[in-house]
Amino acid sequence: MPIPSHLTSAAIAEFGREIEAIRNEVMDSRGERDARYIHRLIKVQRCMALSGRLVIYASLALLPQWGHAFAAWSTFWPAIALGTLMLGCAKILENMEIGHNISHAQWDWLRDPAIQSGSWEWDHVCPSDQWKHSHNVKHHTWTNVFGKDADVGGYGLLRMFSYQRWKPFNLFNPLWALLLAILFEWGIAIQELELGRVAKGRVTWASLRPMWLKTREKMLRQVLKDYILFPLLAGPLFLYVCGANAAANIIRNLWTYLIIFCGHFPMDVHTFTKAEVENETRPRWYIRQLLGSCNIGGGKLFHIMSGNLSHQIEHHLFPDMPSNRYPDVAPRVQALCVRYGLPYNTGSLSRQFGTTLLRIFRMSFPGHSTLLDGYPGKGSPA
Image 1 (cartoon, one colour):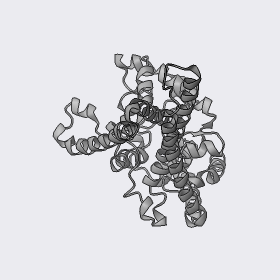
Image 2 (cartoon, one colour):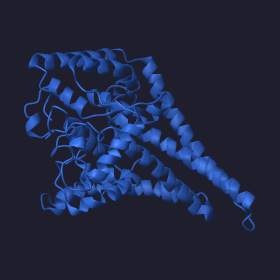
Image 3 (cartoon, one colour):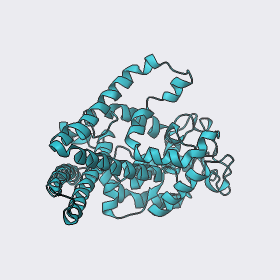
Image 4 (cartoon, one colour):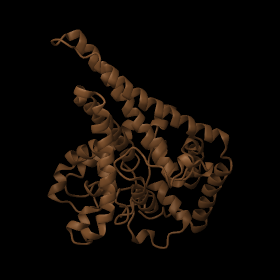
């Protein structure tokens, strides 16, 4: 969809100036409050991860030694589930509010060598530098531009918009979406490899081999850590710890998938063609980020656990702004949208995920969906 027609060039330029004024004000005010936030959060996350693993190991002592005593089993399963949940939440915090945002250089201004975007390696099978290219460069630069942003194309796996050519493979859209959710970190890891282009002969495997070797090395390190080394500490109870670690990773994957998909695929999100972004100015780029992103309503804990990607609009407007400032600037951005007559796509988690699920199921079948991809008075987005 092109920039809304009611905006003149002067209005677009002024909108961009006001957006930049908000950014400059916040960036100039960064200080001790922000430093305390990130340092405290890292400590909390690491304590939670350690505590979760300790609870998992402690739960093993509750396993019945003789027979299958119901009382022993009924105590063991809640205990190991608690440890697994704690570890899963720790992984969510590390990936979402810590690793993701550090990799956006949100905390480089602190000049703390331990949390620099160029050196941070997150708890994920995708190497940080590879993810920064596919996410920071491709996705954030070309948000929702077909042929430029792989995310808008359903990560190369899903049909998410009517403007993608339908194939019989898409009949299983809900199944592929479920598998992607469960294995989300693995899907992100192989996304940058663009294996589909190899299959189509557009690129050679030899050109991708160095990237693949680096990705494979990171995958092996994560598998070694979660599925071999930590479980080995449990001795003969290896499989219990291995299963708990796998469950914690799945918890993280499902939550990450939920938040990211609710930030980009709900009803009324806008998409763009490559022709529509030719010679795009910075103010127009701001408007595209606004139109191509969606917020999710929630409380303070929800925002932290989402990596503040519940403020996806603000994140796309200000990707290098400390994420703890997004709740402060969101009302100001929304007020600007009201003044300029621009949509500000925000809603409850149930609304955003519900319409995302509707999209996944509807795009299983051929044809165009006016409900999902059409905009009243604006026509189709592409």
